[in-house]
Amino acid sequence: MNLQTRQHRRSGVALLVAITTVAMLTIMVTEITYIARMRLMTASNQRDRVQAYWLAKSGTGIYQLILAANKQIGKNEFIQQFGLGDSLWQMVPSLNTGMMRMLFVSDSAGSDVDEEDIETFKSEGTVSEKVAEESREGGVFNDRNFLDFSGDFSAEITDMESKIDINQLGSEGDVLQDSPTASRLFSLMSGEDNDQWFLERNLDRWELIGNLKDWIDQDTYRSGGLGGQEDSLYANEDPPYLSKNAKFDTTDEIRLIEGWNGELFEKFRDKLTIWSRGKFNLNSFDEEMHRALIRATSLSQPSDAQLDMCFAGTEGSVLSAWDVASFNTGQDYATFVMNNCGIELDASKITNVTKQSQVFEVISTGMVGTSTVTITTIFDYSGSSTGRVKYIRIE
Amino acid sequence: MMFSRSNRGLTLIEVVISLGILVFMGAMTWQTIAGSLMLRDILEYEDSVSRSARVAMDQIKKEIRVAFLTSNTAAVNTYQTVFIGKDGGDEDQLWFNSMAHRRKYVGAREGDQAEVTLWVEKGTRETEQVLFHRESGRVDHEPEKGGVVLPMITHVKTFNLRYLDGTINEWTDEWDSTGPDQSNRLPRAVEITLVIEKEHPETGDEQTFTFLNTVVLETAVPMKRSLLAGDGGGRKLPI
Image (tube, rainbow over all chains, first blue to last red; front, side, top):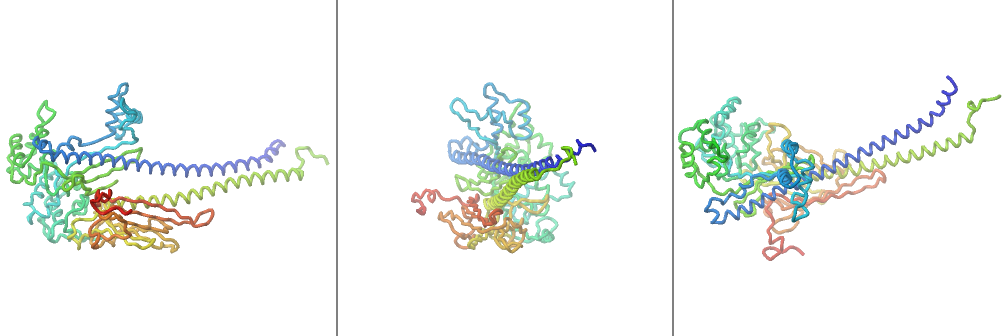
């Protein structure tokens, strides 16, 4: 070993001390920076979540305003004469500030929305930063635009009178097949596709509907064809539980019913309600509900092909006859179906028809960054012009 | 004996000076590291207290906000919903039903309803007060039994609840939806006070952190305009 090498070794002590010190300091700084970044991210997410919550609340609030106005307009006799008593909320079935931003930007001079922005909106439901920024700019009359806020919300409204109220099952007699609600529910579950779906899973529709009725009704016997005690269905659960013998308090409670805890509930949940007191607004039915009602009340069971023809639009026309039809009574409905579909209905079975919906579900989602909050609210306007909140869920 | 300059040892003064520099550098480094460690401990301490309190408060708020009472009161032997708050000084208790339940397993026979209980008692270490949370995913006729019990937050000094009676616009320390005064009624709002007392890592002193929140119950009957405005249509607001 030569002299020069030994000299280098001696001076290495200082280098070692320096490296160790720097390494320790680096570790400390890294750890503190990491902790600080984690805190910042947690705080940012918390902030975004709070913003998303209030954006979702905004969507709900706008619909509350629309529904309050709808209620007032509905009282106007002049408007009622034209069958427009319950039309305001139907004119705004959904609200989406992201879509508003894109429309606003595409309308303004010198700006445009490109394909990429549209694809991003379609896939993620949010607009690009460029579109968001442009949509916030003020116009001729104001420095600030009404879309001058970060994040977006989308909201949609449906009335409960366009669904089947399963709470009515408990008060419609002992014979399940004679119950109008059970009959409509069975019709909803009918059709070639549904027949195949139930066959593949070996599920008996009347038993499943009977299980719903047994949860509500006061007796202890099963309503379906198999017979036996209601509570035996839940005796082997962990922990075991009893049939409620009272009405459903939330739609999700259906998951507790034998046979309804899985995909069956997911398949039909959009068509079921517990809030409408058995009323039906035929003017807000969707096609699936129309099909179910026609099947349930027709004098001879229509085939799927007949119903398909009935709902096929007129060639060259944007709106079908269903879109422009307005029904005040069951007889109106039966006459329309007879004229347009050639299917004869028993009008006496189309009961509890209302022209004005009173109970509404508003689903509003607020989005800020990666945070999303969805608020589902049920408003009941039957006893109050401002509406009572019957149900709310925040996710 | 002759030594070359490179092989010569260090003089005492050189050793003393170099040791002095080394000690100085060591002291400076240690001070910096110790300061950083202390800062980290304090950050972790404050972070753990505020984060755990915030998470607990968020959970409590979320559940109380969507508390509900059934209007189907006939089915007492199979299904009962309650909102009962008992005043226990700094250790209040609350039983209620909420629509905030989340199913954890696909196909589980649970809906969105739950029985919830909140109360304070000594934890397993017997040295600190713990806020416990019980949640049962099925509502039955025994609102105080069943479900899963989990600790929410430790070192609880105070867990105090007050309830706003929407019909008279007054805050009360207790609530009982099964009693005659508040029969099957929800309070319009609940005020939650949570005080955490924890030893400071640097000073060793007990330090208290207070978290206060008011939650409006969404399904409770809204307060009358006359009560809010005091316009003579109802009972006046207290001055």
